[in-house]
Length: 98
Image (cartoon, rainbow, N blue to C red; front, side, top):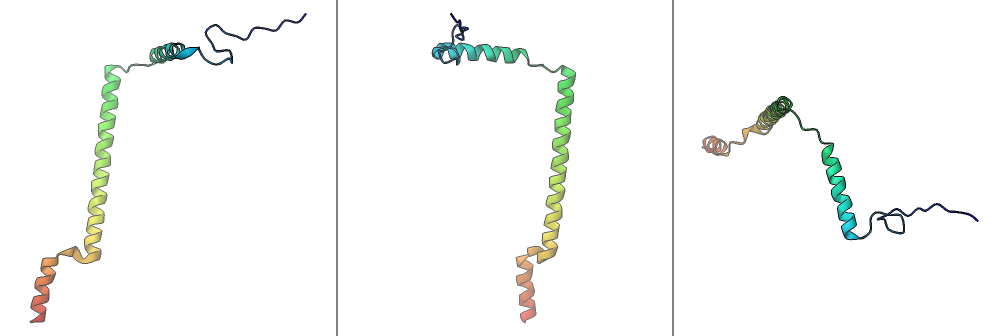
């Protein structure tokens, strides 16, 4: 006579999956959420202040870089395409044509 070990776990479906029914799955999900929330480490006030300052300094540096690149490319485009002052070009053409 051979004995086979029971693989069925209480509260699980016959195919070995998760808990039975929608309420069992919902309860399992809520238990897992609580377990994950227990793992969260809340920063101290000093850590939070340091993190905030690091983010603000980084944002200011990126703003300065983007502003500098905008000025550089704008100046380059003005130099390459002649400034694009249409009113001065029209006034200059009238003076040359006379």
